[in-house]
Amino acid sequence: MAEKPSSDTLVLFVRHGRTPTTGEVLPGRTRGLHLSDVGRGQAKAVAARLAAALDIDAIYTSPLERCRETAEPLAQEVALQATIDEGLIECDFGDWTGATLKTLGALPEWKLVQNTPSQFRFPNGESFLEMQARITDTVTRICIQHPGQTVVVFSHADPIKAAIATAMGTSLDMFQRFSVSPCSTSAVLYGASSPVVLTVNAIEDLGTLKPS
Image (cartoon, rainbow, N blue to C red; front, side, top):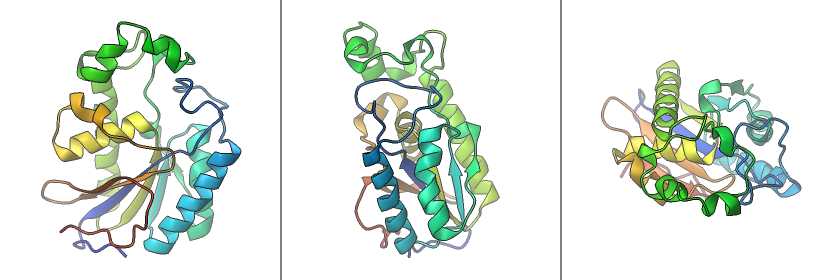
C-alpha cells in the first residue's frame, strides 16, 4: 500500500486501453470507439494490479466509451461506481479529428504540435494550453473532494501528459517528451506543498509507491 500523509491525495492516472485505431488515427472525442480485444485484456490486467496494490477510494473517468470500458473492470474489482467527469475528456482536435497520424505527420503544423505545443490550437478545436488548464482544474477539484484518499482517474494520453507536466512544474512544451502508453499508470501525490510525481507510464507493481 502506498504511504502518504493523511491529508495528501494520491491520484493514479490511467490511460484507456488499446482500440482498433490506436497508433493510426487521431480519434479525439469521436463517440462509439470501443476497446479492442487487446484493450479489454489490458483493462482487466491494470484493474488486477491496482486492486492488489492499493486501497482505492474513488474512480473517475472520461465520458468517452474507451475510458469507461477501461474503468469498468476496476470498478467491479473494488465495488465502486466510476464517476464520469467531462473535465477528463480527450483534447478537442477539431478539424483534425479522425485523420490518420500519417496524414497529420506530413503537415507543417505537426512540428508545432511536437516541439512547441503551447503555441498551437487545433483548427476549430481546443488549444493545448486550454486542455492543460482544464485537466489541472479537474484534478484540483477531485483532490479537494478526496483529501487523504487514493483516486484512480481514467483519461487520455495528452491530458495525462499535460497533468504530469503541471505536477512537475515544467513547460507544456516539454510534455511530448513523456510517454503514456495504453493502460499505463502514472501516479502523483498532491498535498499542501508541491505535487510529487511518483511514477510515469508504469506497468509494473505499484505496491511501493511513496515519496523518497
